[in-house]
Length: 176
Picture 1 (cartoon, rainbow, N blue to C red):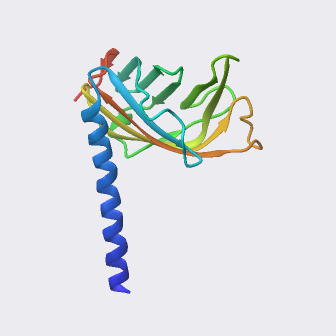
Picture 2 (spheres, helix red, strand yellow; picture 1 turned 60 degrees about the vertical axis):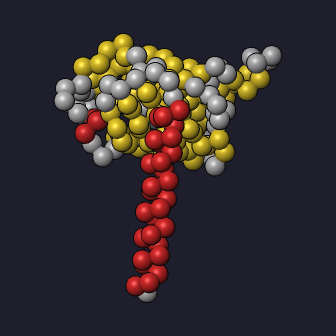
């Protein structure tokens, strides 16, 4: 039994190192003012593998707001509030019909002007790194496809990571 526990622990450590390596790889491949959002929805990549986001960022001691777009018409909005949110292990995501901590979407048919949008219904946002030059946020939970966001509507599992390199902030007033 002890041997089994050691094997499981070793695998978890290796998987954790791989995820951190992915963060570092994404960060090193970005140019200044670029954001990468690797997002999986029901175990399928949501955004194109080469999608790069830019947008408006606002970071304060009691608020984080990101409103970003990519070259394919994809977008996401992330909003966190609470004093010193960036010092917490995670922030509980909020979601409902009129507001969600995380909203993400993309164009699915440009000619027909069709798209798909989702709102976080339950989940967490983990601030891994939060500095003016580097942001890494993990997101995961359940999302609902807009406009069907009522409690009885179907939910979809999602998880992802947002990595930003030297982003341009509209406001940055986080105290050290």
